[in-house]
Image (tube, rainbow, N blue to C red; front, side, top):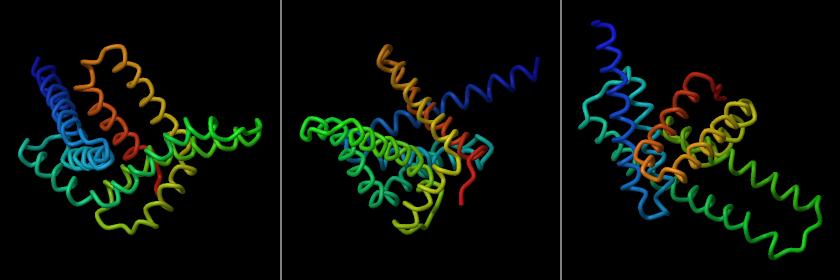
Length: 194
């Protein structure tokens, strides 16, 4: 009976962290431009939590989150602006340019590459304390191509969680944290970085 109580407390604590970090990300990502910084800080909180055996005091977790949010803001803002530009390009370029099938396919392949890039760049940036911008870009691109199946899995999880949130909007309270937690687990356990 004691083992079941310990497991219940362990998983209950993880669910609490998922909800808590989801709320922090939602609050700090309210201006759309800071969503990349909020995601990076969320990843940093989960990487720190994982290194502490999934147990931290709430004040230490909050401190870790906001310290990462402030420290990681410059590059994260630039990457977020890139992401917004890619999303606009996905919708606007086919309307603006009358492209043939091959050119349109190449454009969508490049957009897919950017989506994979944005999937992994924030977690790599969260993991590394000091990294140059060019090194961050190169490390992200090489990590994607070395671990393509895991990065695609991360994208599939994201799409599924978007679907859940679309159908049940109240699940956003836990979905963001769950997404960041799963990606951190996949990244730390499966992905090989160069």
